[in-house]
Length: 281
Image (tube, rainbow, N blue to C red):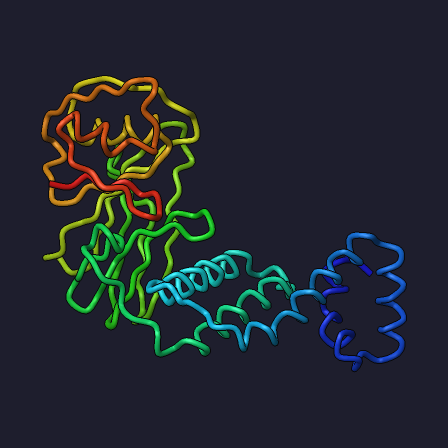
């Protein structure tokens, strides 16, 4: 019995309802395989803590609902990409989901919409009945689209004008991962089927590490240099990407003081909690 198969029987074994033959097989697997034994012990420990979570007061962040929804979107997208592979149950994902649901149920009246500007709460752009927001979920950068009517999202690589992806979306909420598989920074333009909506721009660092700490060019050139050098995605809001700028950073400049370094170069920027940099007016 391997680890994934053993996990299928954890709950019934813990509750004492597993049939004798399977119980004996699982116990034999635990004795023979230290990894299965350790995994079950972790499962047992987490399950034993669930009653305590139900009674302890829980302070719920204002953006808890958005973060959980984003994680679920990302998880569903991952499952979709894995088809037609057989889906295997993972008790850790199930338990984390259960704890998150418990937190929501325990403090549902404490949840409020996030306050503050778009820069503070994330890049959330009203698009009629649609909102689009860049977010990093489980280490993956993506676009979260929440729409109440059918819409088509088109993602274009501005370097060659080639469409990277085009997807019609039914009403609902979807996480669309954004990746750059090249060595150098790339700029993606994201447009919606409603023609009056301005496209979104995001600059993704490439796989190779850059060190372009000084230069002159367009604002878009600067964004690509910064993204590649400091390994951070950048989006540009309400600025002329062809504006000519100069930039110069010292070897001591890092992502921690990047906003201040950009301001010294007359480039206004904000670093979001998700570590996405925003060039803004």
